[in-house]
Length: 465
Ligand SMILES: Cc1cc2nc3c(=O)[nH]c(=O)nc-3n(C[C@H](O)[C@H](O)[C@H](O)COP(=O)(O)OP(=O)(O)OC[C@H]3O[C@@H](n4cnc5c(N)ncnc54)[C@H](O)[C@@H]3O)c2cc1C
Image 1 (cartoon, helix red, strand yellow):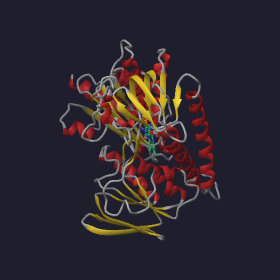
Image 2 (spheres, helix red, strand yellow):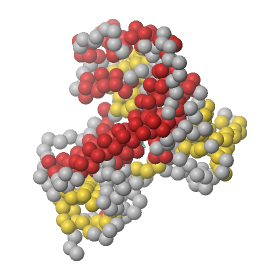
Image 3 (cartoon, helix red, strand yellow):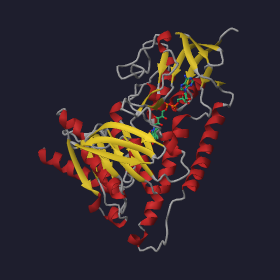
Image 4 (tube, helix red, strand yellow):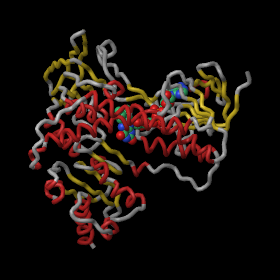
């Protein structure tokens, strides 16, 4: 049978792939989406952002209810019903997935429910034997949990985030390997659900891509919740039997052994390139194993694009969407497009308290002697956060030292993931601290805490003139 031909063949219908396909269709192109998953929707909807945040919101409310006395409330008993939390999550995720599936099956795209592999730079073969030809391709196959070479890990049964997100019971005890975003968020979820949790992180602090000071606030909160948290460790050996798992590691030069019923491997994710046969297409990867792309998302073959986790540099949904859209616009010659501005890197960790950052961490700016000026203000000295008993953390503003242009912000504290958006538009528009101070800030709000570091920077700059 002759191969069907398309203007764009998208491999992987998640956030990057679907949005690339959508833009190409809006440009009037013939588009095929190939996705081999049992369910359509991609990681964000099915096993990433949305299910994790749904679960975390339940335990955040539980935690608040358990603090009832502090607020003068008599809440006799607040406890988790893991099965009900899971049922609610399933209903919500089903709705999101149905909505996405409807959009994909709307007839605007040809959908192929199969896995793809390249045969040559313009042809893919599907797992059902069909062949498709494309003028352009978008590789958007996402990522999958990785299993680093830790002695005994491969031989020991472990959970990944996929399993943790599907639990409908409260595990008695869990050892979590890793201290990244997924590890921290889901450790806190499990702990608040009622599990005994031990977290083992290799780096000197959790959330190693963030500043040590911000990570320390989250670390303290996890410890206060009752998580036994080890940093600066080296995993020596992992083993398991029908009673559970044993993890032996070195922490601060001493040997530590911890046992638990379950093991959660949250040591990271890797690009999902299995079976794609990129070599047949002549597509090259970086030393880190991601698909190498230029600023327009083109791979080493200029008609083949990549977007999302498969190429990075960050595993973040709004970037996957932007990369997919950019790839489609570039492929079909839309004028006036711009590459993605990674200086506007926006990241949120949905722990309690959450941690949100915009721009580069100040630790990095200091290490590289990048001229900047910063000021911070603690939540425990701000009216609204005091009355909310949300006293952990701080807001930090980073500005260019001459005119006070905003170049970054770091917020760790209640609603940080919302508050950080006070900075995204000003930073994208190259506004200064003086511009931001011209705006009104309602009292009493959490947001008005931002005015204190803005004022401090404005005063420092004014004093220099
Ligand atoms: C637990 C968890 C929580 C997260 N929380 C957040 C968050 O709060 N905020 C945030 O910004 N990011 C979050 N992320 C990251 C975010 O989910 C990802 O960055 C994003 O979903 C990646 O989108 P993608 O399009 O690259 O890949 P995906 O959405 O994974 O899509 C890839 C698709 O490709 C298909 N596929 C793979 N191989 C083939 C093949 N050979 N042939 C055909 N189809 C194939 C797959 O079936 C899949 O549908 C989280 C991730 C995890 C794991």
